[in-house]
Image 1: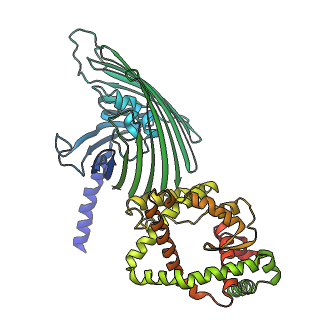
Image 2 (image 1 turned 180 degrees about the vertical axis):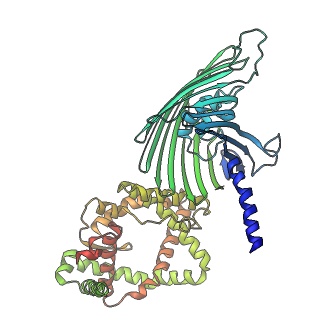
Image 3 (image 1 turned 30 degrees about the vertical axis):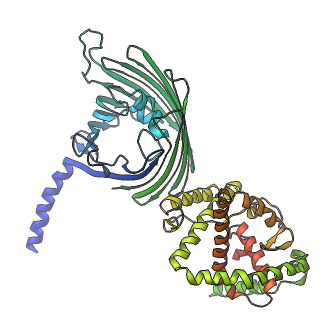
Length: 324
Length: 233
């Protein structure tokens, strides 16, 4: 009895400060797929498996909490998938949040990607040949600074004001050579975006720019999505221009529809892509189905890539995913 | 106790109604009984001397696991027609499940040989064009027995034409493979009925007709018919 009391007292003394210090969550998602690509053998491929740690930290302030988030890729299929080691880079940022909004600093999701690309990102594989192929900012104009997860960045998210959230961010990479004095001395990139949600309808807009010394990239995008009961639809448009001496102009439009019954979803997506260096537009459509079972899911998906584009053939994939 | 008694009374009333259809009702649903009985007799003879013995042999020779595989394979193909008909009936939830069944059974289930969708909790449905016409409000018309094809109604018989047109087996280019698939499916379907036919009693023609018509009426409303609502009694 006495021992128990002592143990309880010790446990209590140890637990209290730990709770006050931090609340961290270890999480992960393991995803693997069997892919049959046009003119290729069957391939067992990893689908962006990742592990992460995130949490909140008490700062001793009334309305402000610290936060941190680290996430890295782990490959379930190939030992040499990440040349830098067992992990591939994804996210690493810290920040603070309160009723005034939140500020994030570090390597984080680009708000442009979250608002303009993510609403139509229904396919499980994140690979270029699947749904992300025609993301103008995050993929096709992909320059020195990534528009999907961006390094060296600080972003401010306003609180949700009657459905409206405004986001402003900057990239401070100091990566460009400024020998000729043409670069801005402070900011290497910026993003201003806003999203408004009312009764299942979400409208988002984003303008972003990156200056990296050898090339300047400017993009803008609009996204409209609507969800009602089991139906969800999204329409997005992106327009981008990259100046590397000659100007490369691209735009893409995506249309996505999804129908969910219980834990089963069927979805389809169509995308068209225009590039001023190509003589014809490129098209892609896909159809998929996902069944969620507890913390696991299985999916079967098919992507039909435009036959004029030799670099991307048609693909079919079945996959299995476990989250924890 | 009171509810149990009422259920018993309801069950009794239903079974009496089902087992003793009136002569007037017979004429109404089966005005072509003379022709139908002749066709039924022809089909029954064909079944007795050809199809049934072959099916019994098939069931005896085939290992159970292979039999299940064949049954699953054709069940997966039939889901294609079910999906289409659920869409035509505006049953999008069911169509979504049908699509999921086809996608998962055709891939994870090794071309449909293994029914992985059922243990995953994705419900199987059974729809065809006859049911779709019924769902749209088309009356069944008189009962009809077709040579080789068996019991149907005018509506369901017409529905068999689009059923045939959307049948995935029909898409096979190779004649030999296609006919082998048709034959295997017929034998498989017949083998699945070997157990059920032991329930047949009395006049076989009447039993099969009533069972067919009741099952079709039940299937068109997906088992949600008002006759099955206890509160209506």
